[in-house]
Length: 531
Image 1 (cartoon, one colour):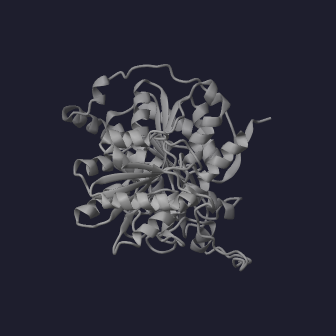
Image 2 (image 1 turned 135 degrees about the vertical axis):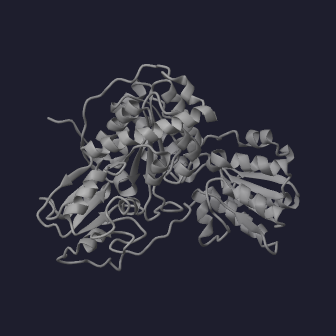
Image 3 (image 1 turned 180 degrees about the horizontal axis):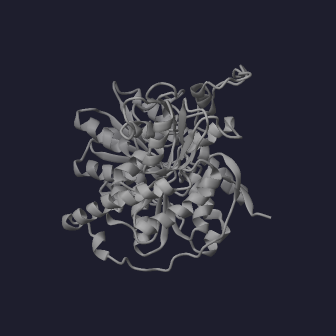
């Protein structure tokens, strides 16, 4: 009997990596990527093999640590959500220039439709920008298999490989047949240590080598079993489907589509297969979840005359939002026997802070004090406390990216804003808020910073927070005056104390830090249940 498991797409990636000889996973929690690292943290074989699986402070430090493990010849994986690629970009792009020693695979979990994100960016553009191979699984089975192939490809060409997931694949389950388990790599030093020093003289050489390898990457994509051309008799239209879009497409044609289909799950784009479709079909429909990454490129691959290319750019598929089976049905003109409208009993439920959450008491106190000023401005950040924008609090005026609360509050104060308040969480502070605090300290900025400390990374399910138990020392080490580092327990019974502390620190014309500290109500429940 085959060894099968019911796995999330994230879990299939994790198990595939363990079975491929992984030595370390480096990540910062971010939906929909979080479960990859969590699976490895709890999997017995990972513990037995001492696979590194602790959370990193942010995606950049994760990328750099994984690159260090690769330098030593070991197989390493980096996991993040799509906006985390922005944070890791410096190290990610330059990792393509240094190259790798042990296999290095970067997992980017994209979030079309922005279920829990600020934007819909498509991580495939990052892979193309870095000029490295990209892989995009269509199913959980393919995700399990592909991670091992990605490690092999990385070690064959000595470059990182990017694997791109989307929310629906990451967070849906399917039966996966698992294969053999290989041993971890022995520790070895790079054969060419010079290339790891990206001084201009070295980088120029590496840049030419990387560009030359793109011919090899294209050949790999042309030959890849993940890029398959299925012919059919009806040539009026051919369909190019990538990643999960292929999975959706084949739901309508379990016995095979009546038109030619090109499945793409490995990049660069297989040019010859695309040209074949253009030569044989009257039109091409491109189905991809995310931005028109393929659709834009094939217009430069095929002759501009005589072939119509359809997709997101031309309106057959919606320009924004995630791809769905219904989108594909409409694009294909497939009739549906019956369409069911949503039940009137099902109403939207906007997210809200949990009952008993310490952020609630913090915002209640802050709102009361803010009323005492004509134009108080509160710059917030990414975390559970972002929900302070919604009723009943309506307490914040900006949320942009991880760490931006402190630097935006500083910039506003530089422009003359008073009071200028930043709200940031403990995990986000150690992710990317500390450097902004140093800027503020160096310029003695007139800002009040509230680090709402719930002793965990609450928004993604309660992972460890890098600065737990050390926030005061970090702030003091950066240069905040000790008397202006204030700690309070955010409870209703302490409301007057909280308000008075906020008033006093706003009145202080310098950098002050207030730390309302109380454990996340959800992690507290879990801890109580365990004990």
